[in-house]
Amino acid sequence: MGHEYCGTVQELGSAVKSIKRGQFVIGSFFASDNTCLNCQIGYQSSCQHRELVGGAQAPLLRVPLADGTLVATPDVPSEELIPSLLTLSDVMGTGWFAADAANVKPGSTVAVVGDGAVGLLGVLSAKQMGAERIIAMSRHRSRQKLACDFGATDIVTERGEEGVARIKELTNGIGADSVLECVGTQESMMQAISSTRPGGHVGYVGVPHGVELDGEKLFFSHVHLHGGPAPVRRFLPELVDLVWKRKINPGKVFDLNLPLGQVADAYRAMDERRAIKVLLHP
Image (cartoon, rainbow, N blue to C red; front, top):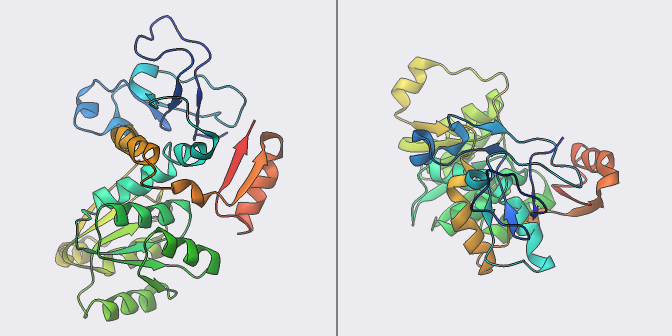
């Protein structure tokens, strides 16, 4: 299990040319060659030769297509940077894609549906991209606090139609310019679309389960929809640079550290909402 990873290169396959033994690297949950047509336009998660990377919750991990998948840090990082670098593999990369897909621009108003690790780092991403107002939708005090630390200016606790009404109230009846959907349920998707102004954008990165859209309502909403599995590899160089220069600290999303042998306890803590995100170390 597990698809988020970073670490030091121990061995190399015979075909690997650019990655070197001893480098500290981060990769995505999809391995990609980074050369095909889809990769060239920035959609490495739709690489024509993509492979799903699993089994990362282990002492060692084999990463296919290493030259196209892995990004090395400028040097071996200090211990304090590793949590933030690890987030880039998925939750920060996915939160960043949500903001990018939602067309977040300097001065814009953004709403974030979902207060898990991806939603919280979507808040951080929107802040980094220059959003002026960021509305985080959350009912949990610890997550509300972290959202504010990451740049949220408003907290909305309501959900569904009441949540949409509150967003409209905060935006003079219009809706947000950009909405990040980071859950994947029918309710969250409809809440995101309905909270977006005409001409606005929804970036959806929550893996859909049971989501069905009404084509006619969508047609008349004038809302842009864009999302899918985050092309994390596209953003890795920029995100590594931001972490390396200590301009962002997404590692704050880890609120529990456990050894790899206690992985079941980690899942239990997240399932019971006792932890937002657990960092497992060998």
